[in-house]
Structure formats: structure tokens, C-alpha cells
Length: 68
Image (cartoon, rainbow, N blue to C red):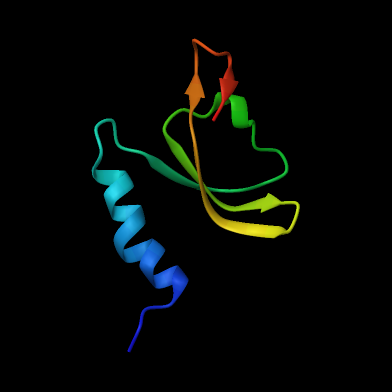
């Protein structure tokens, strides 16, 4: 039986992000979240123009001065 998207994210993707050096933190999206303060974070349920994206990697690039 195939995994659901959320199972894949929790069991595979989240664990890989957390095992990186530096380890990434998984944080839920909120309207008050300061995206420019994040570094090596994955934001869950990130809103897009077409709905919510299940996981968006977010990091701050100090050389460019913006988030990616």
C-alpha cells in the first residue's frame, strides 16, 4: 500500500532535514511567522497562490539579503 503524502513527509523528508548539519527545524506556518528570521527551516503548509504547499524549505542568504 503506498504512503500518503503526509506519511512520506513525516517519515522520510522531515527525518532527512533533521539529520543535516546544521539540522533543519520543521516549523508550522503562521501569519505572524517572520520568514526573514528563519535559517535552515522547513515551513509546513506554506500558503501559495494555488493553495497550501505541504512543505517549503526556507533559508536566509545573507549575501543576497533575501530568503530562498
